[in-house]
Amino acid sequence: MARPAPHAAVAAAVDAGATAPVAPADAAPPDPCGGYAVAVAPVLGRIARSAQAFLDRLGTAKKATEVVTAAGALASALEGERPALDAIHSGAADLDGAHARLTVALTALAAAVRDLGASYGDATRAAARDAASKRLNGALHEWADAVHGIQAVCPGLQ
Image (cartoon, rainbow, N blue to C red; front, side):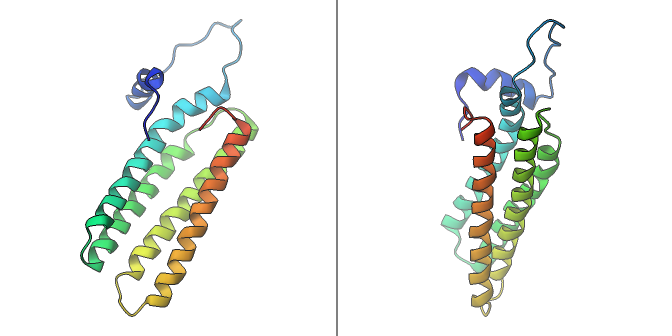
């Protein structure tokens, strides 16, 4: 997921752990959606890169064990991003509520990916694989619904 060029410097500063300057007391309150977008962009970028690496590995997998390994790596990467998502707070109750759904969806997605990978570890588990695929599909819908919830609060975010 490419970031627009004007935000690259801001995102790089966030990635490096830099802090924004303090606004004067008479300044307008910061836009929670803009601040949220800057805070969440690095996390979503890492998630997107992990998902792409998973898809790349699936495209070249010749053995079920490679699918198991790829799914485990993606699930671990998703689980590893949960603390970063949990740390993001916009200060706007509606946006923070929508964001909370995203963190829950990330956990469901990681579990579903892990289950799908595990189902490939045993060739006799076709029924488990089907159930895991359905669970993954449900988790993907949950993620999409969470993203739509954020976009309802911040229509400019894509």
